[in-house]
Image 1 (cartoon, rainbow, N blue to C red):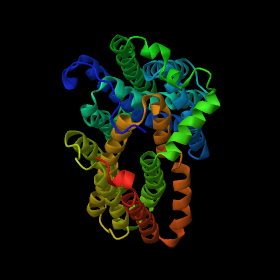
Image 2: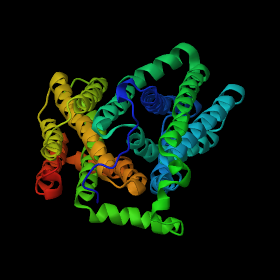
Image 3: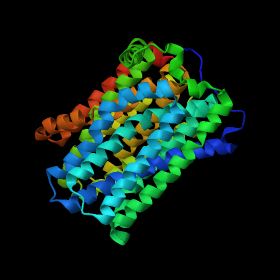
Image 4: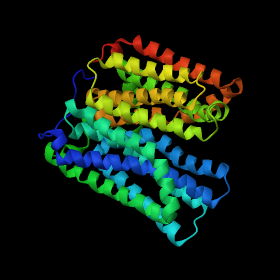
Length: 418
């Protein structure tokens, strides 16, 4: 594993570089498109069918290909280079959204057709997500990675925060067709902005992107062996292994309890189910604040900041066991969001700096997988613990995250991280 950052940089000052601006705008718009489309898709399927299992199946049709294809997507990034995969994934998104828009406008599509197109979007995301993360070190100077990650992840948090209200409001005002048209337009703008970066990388590196980073491993390496090499690297490097384990455990212990347990908590203690939206908005606001703080004030001792961030999430989850008022619950969940947003920027920036370039796509695909693949298990765990009460649910989940903070603190590779 490299001990020094390996990122290449372009010669200009990053925040004044128009190429960097296109990168941030393109990835930010793509994040907002994701947030808006999930709400649009949910409401549209509810319009097509009765509320129930159908909506869940359509969302699964989007999520399943994304989770299954993430690791192969990481191999593809390392073989072709992140710029090509980002551009290809972006335009595939646009094509699928255009097809869906044509179906919605001119026909009455069946739920199965919508689900199939949703699955194609999930497949595009499986390649796009690790490629988008791997693209940053090729454009952004190492010392500015935290700031740019903060901008991109801040856009994602902002989309999650306002996306539901904006999408629902637009549908109510102009209908499903026009709202989807606006989403397509934003996706196309993102694709245009990100596609221009292919020329930037080629000018900065010569033929590096044409050859593909995987060339450093040897052209005869099979797809399966390339995937195995990425998994082996992540397992044998203590820093990578520890961070991936922390991300996975936090997602298992937080997502289900907050969404499922939070709904029960709101109904039983906080004055009704409507208060859940206020509480979840607190999480989004905290996540946005955490992302921006990590970018503008990068920590000098990253290892202990990682430990502190995990501990803050655990303390917030444990605190939910005792709250009885919506204001207190919102404040506590904001702490969870703050820790999550801060950790996201620190961990991703650290891996972008330190993982060898030829393995970066595969390692970052594992990061994305750790954030999405364990959500179903988190829901199951929340369902198993809920019969014992929300107090037990949040105490158990919070204690698990606090234990994770303790384990992270025992790792020399993480503890000594600067």
